[in-house]
Image (cartoon, rainbow, N blue to C red):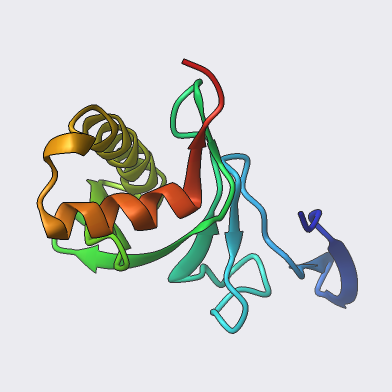
Length: 135
């Protein structure tokens, strides 16, 4: 995984400008290439989320998350799974999405034998991103 790289550049007034070449959040989120990341003032509308969603599950392929500004906060969307989280801040929306992905994995795993064709497709896609590490 890419580590956070900080670069000190030209001085703007008394303060140096700090550029983040590959932003990585403590949650495991990293800005998507080609997004609006690059400086501390720019916040990406997309990121790759590879954070822990459950103590017994491991994310092996990051989820591409897109943030959308709503009237009263943000929505964090994973379009390929048609899942989302909401919150007052991007962090809150990402935490809600984490909880949603956890519930989705556990419920699809539990009901695997009874899934519709659509949910089998969702389950198959989800298992590409997340694996169970222990029962």
